[in-house]
Length: 241
Image 1 (cartoon, rainbow, N blue to C red):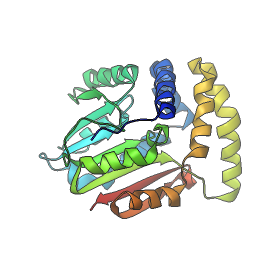
Image 2 (tube, rainbow, N blue to C red):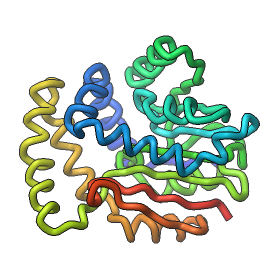
Image 3 (tube, one colour):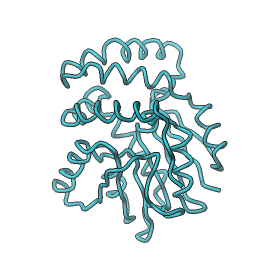
Image 4 (cartoon, one colour):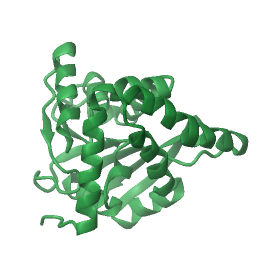
């Protein structure tokens, strides 16, 4: 059954799509520069957590909100599983497709809304989403959609910005995130609004414990999370019952 969006959710989705379309060409450079390449290590951790599934050439993995394809490429390179990427922002997918050419890969990238995907029930052995869930207009709807698409026993991995857990570091990072990052990101990308949106979206997103609770409430089992780099980000994992 299709997930019908409210007027507010439709407006949110439109604004997010337009924002990412505007920064697509500079997105990778800024991600790696502003995170000092730590984001690459975080993505490698996702592939390690799913290594058994990725080793299976019969397994099918979906990377939702794949953006420019960094995680999809990491997953495909880490094993033999088939990987598909989806995103609702065409300019980001165009960058992802260019990476296929550069890396000799053939990952299919489909333009699609992560809250309402056209795949059949119980299609995938694993679903991943990196730094995309917080951009959904309804997080719970997205998680329910992921559960629908996973086979029983299938794994979900959610990599997302979270709440730093080290007190002194929390304040320092908060200042950087809210004051310095938007200036640098705006100067390089030409869209300061996009990098002001980033800390605002993170501040509204559930923290580690609340996201774990949400995963359990929509039907995931064995939910656990791992704080990364002092809680700047967290990797949540769950299994479809």
